[in-house]
Length: 199
Image (tube, one colour):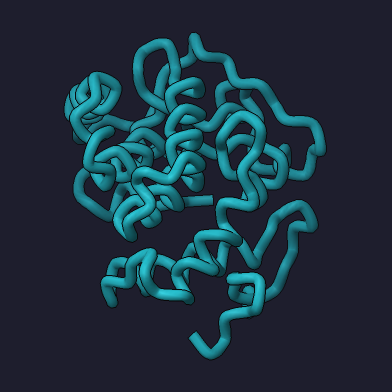
């Protein structure tokens, strides 16, 4: 906590090869994981409250959290961050609710989630584009991205019971030991670590 900045963030310690990436938001996500999942911090702690303010300041008009993927929509990082905030007691915060609204709006037609830029056949070089790439909802869901998003739903006392969560869980269960629909996420979902973030 001594390394936390006044604005609630933590400074990323490594190289910053991609100008469009908010590396301090990425590092703040990492530190939030330690505080919430390892040490049980909640919204009552001033360090956690400051970090939550910093994270939620990255919310777009559509409700998702932008920065780690530049100006591109990232259901995985949005969900990972609001999942931690939900665990920390921010489940009823209207900004967290708006983030869930954004996740609902970004679902694929089949009921799961994918990176919008990948549904257009784009790779991570697209993160440097200033214009947000609109996804193709007709493309199939990604089990990697859907697994990450489901963690946020599971962390929220109300959204875990939703029809969306149930549908996505059924889709994900049907994909066990199958390759992902997107070639850069080709590993099968064989255990808890398979749904972790990848870049």
